[in-house]
Image (tube, rainbow, N blue to C red; front, side, top):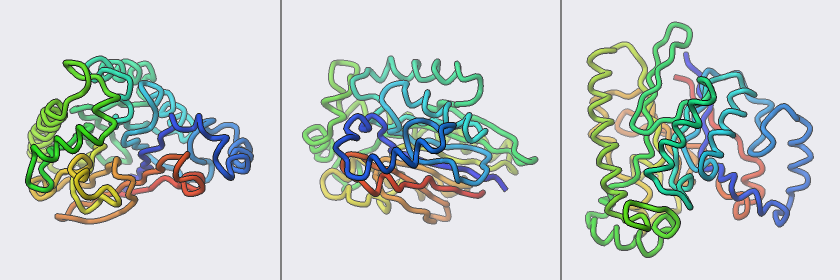
Length: 285
C-alpha cells in the first residue's frame, strides 16, 4: 500500500488579503503553534505519515509554489509531485515559466518533482509507482461546440488576460494545442508503461479535470474551460488513480473504473472559514 497526500488550488497568492478575512487571527494562532510546518497554507501537523505528496496545481504564482512544495516535503518527510495549474502562469509567459519551474524543482535535490508531460518513478515498500503529470488544459469540446467554448473562455476567463502566450496574451487556440500535446503524451506513456511494467502502479496527476462529473459550480458556457470528457479512452490502460484540481470541487470517485480524487482549498479571500478549516486528501493505493 502507498499512502498519498494530495492538495490543489491552495491559491497562496491570495493570502495577501488575509487581514480582511474573518477568523484569520484565530487561524494564525493555531498555525503558529506548530512553527516547524510551512508558514503559509493549511495546517499539516496532525496528518498521518505519507509516502508521497501531490500538489495538483494553483498552489502559488510563478516558481513560489515549488518553494512551498519543498517546505511541505521537508515537514512531512516525503517527496512531492508538482503539476502547474493555470494560476501559476499569471503574469508569466508559459514558454519561459515551464523551464523555470523545472530548474526550481531540480534545486530541491529530489524533494520536489515538477511534471509537465513527464514521469517520476518511485519504489515504496517494494511497489513500483509511476506518476504521470501535466497541466492538461482543455479541449473545449464538452458541449460539442469548440469554437463557441473558445470564444466564451476568451471573454470570461482571466487566463486570457493574465497569461502571456506566443503572440501576446494567451489564446484559446494555444490552450487547445497544449491540451492535445498532453493528451497524446498520456496515451503513449500509459500504453508504454502498461506493456513494459505490467505490475507497476500508474498515477495520473493533472490540474484540469478529465471528466465533466467534477465541475461543481463551474457549469454552463464556462464549463468546457475546466474539464474535458476523456476517461473512457484511458480506462483500457487501467491507471491506478487520477488526481486533479481546477474545478474547486472536492471528491473521491470512481468513473470508467478509474479512481479519481481532488482536494481543492479554494480562495482564502472568498471561501473564508471553509479555506481555513481545509484538510488535504489522503489516498491509499
